[in-house]
Image 1: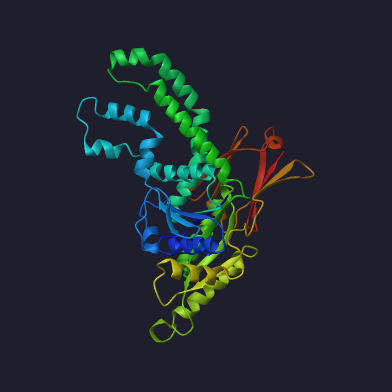
Image 2: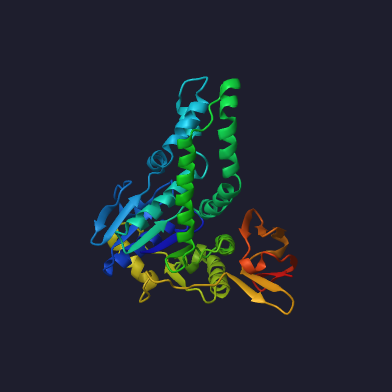
Length: 386
C-alpha cells in the first residue's frame, strides 16, 4: 500500500488537492481510501457528503473517512485514562472539565496517525491518501514519535521501576494512587504502536509527503521551512503543488499588481525545488466540490503523471570518509544558518533550527567520534567528526 500525506499552510487547499488526487487514482482502477486527520474536518465538505469514523464508499474504488480522535482516544488508552480520571477526581466528582483535561495537546492528532497505521496493517486498499492538519500541527505530529521514543527508552523504565518500589509507601502516606501495571502496559502498547508508525513513516518506498502552497511570498516561505523541517526528521517530500494560480485574464485592473508577485513566487518555487516535481493548478471558475469536479481537477494537476508513484526520493543523511575522520552531511535547504544550533552528548547529536529541535543517535561508525567542526553550505549541514 502506498501512503501519501498532503500538508501545507492553512487555507492553501490541502483537502481539495488530497481529494482530487484520490479521485484520479481511483478512476485509474486502484482502490483508494482518503482520510482526514485534521480535527477541523473539511473532507466531507469537499465531497459534499457526511463522513464518519469508518470508510464510506464515494464512487467505484473510492472511499473516504474523517477520523474521530475522541473515539480513537477511548480505544487507545482506557486503563491509563481511568488512572488519571481517578487521580483528578479523588477529592471531587467527575465533571466535563475533568474529561476535557484528559485530552493532552497533540494526543488526538497522534491517535489519528496511529489509525492510519492500523488501516495500513489491514491492507484493504492500494493507496491511502492522508489530508493532514496545517503545517505547524503536522510538524508537531510527525516529530512526536521521535520524542516519545526517546522518553520511553531513557525515562520510562526508571519511572516504572520507581513506581513499583514506592507504590505502598506513597499510597499509604499521601493517599494518592499510583499507576497500576495495566496502566503501564497501556503506555508500552502505545509506545509499540508509535514505534511501528515511526518506522513506517520513514520508509521512503511507501510514504511520501507532498507540500501544497499558493504563489504568495509568505506562503512560499512557509513551504520552504516545512521542507527543511521534514528533512531534519528524515521524511521524504516527493512533490510540491502550487494551488490557486490566477489566470492571465483575471490579473487585470484591480488585481494587476498580483501578476508580478505571483510570477516571482512561482519562479522562486521552481528554482528552489529543482529536481522535485512541481505541479501547478490554476484557480478554477467554481468551487472544488463533488466527485466529478475533483476528478477533473486531479487530471489538471497531474496530467499524464501517475500520482500513485513515488515521484522523487532524496538521500537526506550521508556519511563520508574524509582524510581525517568522517563527515555527516544532512540535506537541509532554506535554513538561516544563524538559527542553527548543534550539540553532542555521547553518541547523541541534537540539532535545533529556530523552534524545531531533533535529537538522534549517530550511525555506528560515528559513535566513538567527537564533533570537531560544522559548516552549513549550499543547503547542507556538514558535521565533521574525528
